Image (cartoon, rainbow, N blue to C red; front, side, top):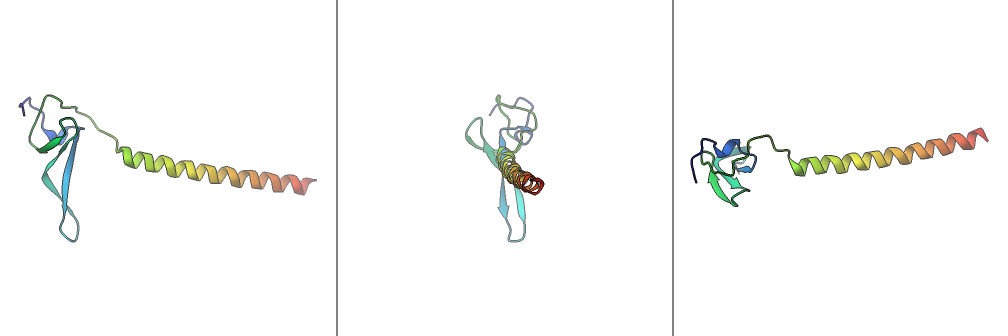
Amino acid sequence: MANCGHQCYKCENFNKYYTNDGVRFQKTKFGYCRANKNNVTVHDSCEKFAYGHRSNFRLDSLINARLNNLLTEISVLREFIEEETRDKNL
C-alpha cells in the first residue's frame, strides 16, 4: 500500500477486528478495508483513504425499524382512544 500519510485506523472504510478473551472483546492491530476488499493493519495507508466519521448503518437501520414500529403502535393506540372517546360522546 502506498504511504500517503493517512493511516487506516482513521479511515471510514476500515473495520477493525476484535478477539474475545472470554470476558471482553480486545482490539487487534488488523482489520478489513472495504475500499480495497482485503485485510490490512491499522498503520497501513492507501490512495482510497476517506477521512470522516461513518455512521453505523446496521445500528441506524435497527433504530429506524424500531422507531417505525413504535410509531405504528402509538398510531394504533391513538385511533383506539379517539374511537372510544367518540363512542362515549354519542
